[in-house]
Image 1 (cartoon, rainbow, N blue to C red):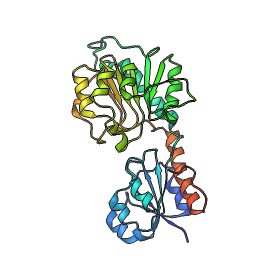
Image 2: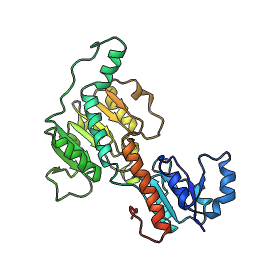
Image 3: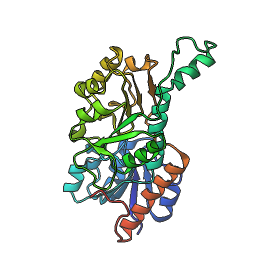
Image 4: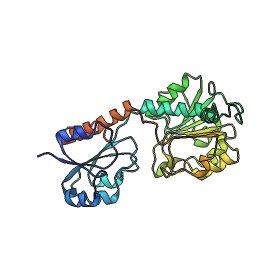
Length: 311
């Protein structure tokens, strides 16, 4: 008998059709009455397909007593109730690596957009204002780049930055012995070094509001903050104050603490470039992420090891 799978988050377009080949699929998001659907099929659900933003709620887990696996599209785990599902013996799979290039591209794009005032210039041209209020931009090439989190994505960002002749430093819990970049023991020291500080650490209690007032003060009035990791890692009110008071030069943000809600102060700032958690949103990457969701579910229910498990 085919295992029953619950779709509990937005999925790339190549996922559901493939899952329907091997499983009985129920779409919680598309149900006319989601609670009635859970009441009817919840005890039979053995797998969940979701994404790193929507994840699974405690209430959803309560309704799925026989759940064996959660396959999530994305790399974040802070919405997956990881501690609870691990304690229950539920396997978790995510989709690392396939999105590294796109997220790194977005980090570089945000650096250029903020420093070279690309979005402000676009608004000016469309409104017929040309150079009005623009001032001069700031060079990216040859500057100092600090990376908070030199993991898979951080390393790809660093390789791209090398092409801009940037001097690269990084901070994380442990030094990487196989990279030529400068390691800083503290985030404050990294910020003090940086012209651009790129945040690419995961969310969760360990990183919450790591980028606080002290870090922003160290980044200084010539510094630009880029966040392509998780919104929770930045103290948004401290960031708003630093931007308003000119204590940092600008910011490029793809993620926010309470998505999709963005502090209104940020919306009014020309020195800030905003994106809707869009860094991995290319056709190529989303299809690859979706394929990993399918492949992980197929692996589990055929008795094989997961391709990309969360250990």
